[in-house]
Image 1 (cartoon, one colour):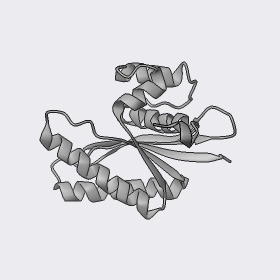
Image 2: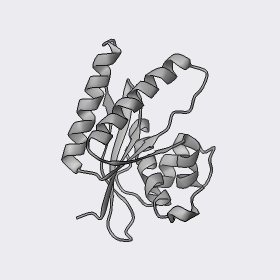
Image 3: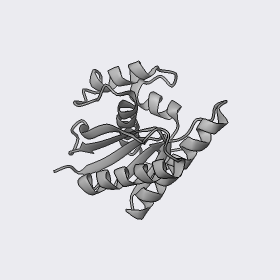
Image 4: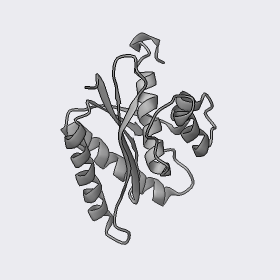
Amino acid sequence: MFDRVVIGVDPGVAATGVAVVGTRGGDRPSVLEARTIRTPAGAPEASRLRALAEELRSTLRAHAPSEMALERLAWGRNVGSAMSVSRASGVLLLVAAERGLEIREYGPLEVKLAVTGNGTARKEDVRRMLGRLLRIDGVPSEPDAADAVAVAVCHLHQARVPTGSRR
């Protein structure tokens, strides 16, 4: 039995990384599930968002996490892509709120910094650090799913910091 179960999410409409990570006492985190939710290419965006919500609901029912950590969108030059990701994030936040989960969002720099100590680390470096340095078993090779593990681990590290110490 795990003391804490967190779902980490790397949002997107076409592909969303989802990872359920649990901790027991002071033990290192364990990956309970990590996968990439893929929605049907060419389907209307509303249908894709509904499929994303259904998949997340299924994962939440299966693992009953109490917390969700979501990677916050980093706005770039591609406004169309950013709008789709923000819509997916909204759907994911709604599903988590419906279940009463505690929700925290982390920027990409925060996630990389928490996992590697370097806010500009590459995706490969993040995955390698999860497996080697933090010795987390079950880190997937799929980039979106591995990113979701990193988001969950970031949250677990941040949650250890007393509230009065956060800025």
